[in-house]
Length: 176
Image: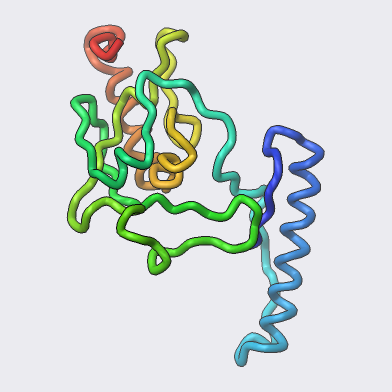
């Protein structure tokens, strides 16, 4: 709701962005009190303790999820889950964001279809026995804009956790 843009790997900049976002919250509440009936006595009870960061570093995986895999509902032999969300790009400059209603057909999987979330996007060829899940998995900016949502991150976590516990070690050697 309070868009800020910067380098999430720079602690000083992250602090500056946190202050900026908290100031924006106060400005929103002031506006609502003045302009929205029923919000005249609204107060901020609490705020998140840090910014929600959409994107930073990602591994270079055995596979890289991209926009075409999402919008064409591509199936994968190493699927660990189904993805259904659109390529949901929020403006990194903070001028606004897209919503489901703003999307065009070329940014969404076909209605009623899903793409496969490949295990290979959670694995790399250089560090044995390392698997990742969430926003650090291998994807393009556009691919991440679909797979970054909580349900998809949970599917990745479940998938790599299940593979890590498979009876033979490592379970994903067939991908390399």
